Image (cartoon, rainbow, N blue to C red; front, side):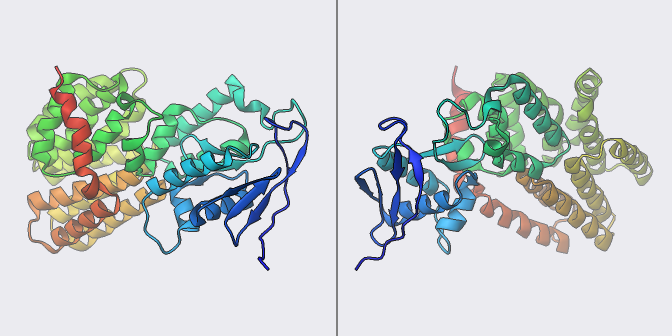
Amino acid sequence: MVQADIIDLWIYQQKKKRGIAMHLELNGSEYKVSAGGLTVELLPKEFALLQFLYRNRGRTFSREQLLDKVWPMEYPVERTVDDHIYRLRKKLRQLGGIDIKTIRGFGYSLAIPGGLAGVAVNPATNDPELRDTMREVFMKFHVYGQGNSMLTLARQQDILGYELDPHYSMVVHFVQGDLEWLIHTDEIPLKDRLFYLNVFYFFIGDPREKVEYAERLIARNLLNPPEQTELEILTMLDMYTLAGQPEKALERLKRSYQVIAGPGFENFIPVTVITELFIHLAAGAGDEDLERMDEAVSRILQDKPFLREIGNYKVVKGLWKLRREQWIEGERLINEGLQVLDMSGFVPLRFYALYKIHHFCRMFLTGSVSDRKYSSLFAAELEACGLARLEHTLEHILLPLLETP
C-alpha cells in the first residue's frame, strides 16, 4: 500500500470554480499533486521545492536559501532554482489556485489565494504614500551601509504589504553579490544594470587595464547620470591610485570636491575624504600630513557613522600601518575593517576592500607576509563570488558597448 504524504488545504479555485473549496493532496511517494480531480506528476526536486514552499507559505526565500533547503549537500547553481520554478509553475497551471510569486529583489514565495471575495489580503500594496515611505527607508539603510537591514525588508514584502521599488530590487541583488542575477535578469534593463556590472568587472585583472577601460566608458557616457557622476568623482580615484597613477587621482579629486560641495552630495563627503587619505598614502605623503587627514576623517565619521565608510577607513588606516612596517597593528586594523564590512552585509564592498588591499600590497609590500596573506584571501574571494567563472560572460556583455558607434 502506497503511503501518501497528505496535506489538508482548502483553497479557492478562483479561475475555474469560484467559491468552491478544493482539496490539495501531495503524494510524497509518487511525487504527485492532486486537486479537483486533476493530478500532476512532478520530478523529485520539483516536488520537494513545492512541498517546502507550501510548508512555509507566505514566507519569501532567496535562491540561496532554497538551494540550502531543497538541494542540501549538492552543488547546483542559483539558475537551477529559476529553472525548477519555471517548470513547476507550468505544471501547476492546470490545477489553478496555486501561485509561486516572484518577490522582486529577493526570491520566491508560495501564495494560496482565497478568503473573502473582493477583499485584498494586503490592501496597502498600491498605496503611493507607503511606497514612497518604504523607498525612503531603503535609501536610508543604503546610505548607512546597512545591507542586512535592506535584505530583511526585501524578505518581508508580503507580510508588510508593499512592493519593492524596481531600482532597489536591483540594489538588493548587488548588495548580496548576486552577479548571476545581474547578468541574466530580464526584470531590469541593461542600462540600469550597467554600473553594477562594471563595478564587478573593475575587480578583475590589472588595474592599469581597467583604468583605460573605465576612461573609455566615461567618454561614451553610457551610464545613468547619477552613476556616471559616481564613477567620475569617486570610483576613478581608487582606480587611478591602484593603477600607480596617484597624481591623476589627486587632479581628479579637485573636481570631486567641487561636485560634493553642491546640494544633494553631503553623504559623499565621508567616502571622499577617506579616499583622499588613501591617495596621499599611495603617493608617499609623510605621517604629519596623513595624521592631519586622519583626524578630519575621524571627525566626519562621528557625525556620519556609515558602516561601509567605517570599514573602508579601518582598511586604509591598516594599509598605512603596514607601509610603515607596523605589521601587527596594520593587520589588526585591516581585519577589523573587513569584519565591519561583513556586518554591513554589502558583499561587493568587502570584496572591493580585499581588491584594494591586494593591489596595494603588490605595489608597496611585494613578497611580504601580508602580501602573500591578502593575495590568497583575494584569490579565494574571487573564486567564491563567481567572478573568475563569469569574467568572459561580463566581457561579452560590456566590451561590445564600447565599440558600438
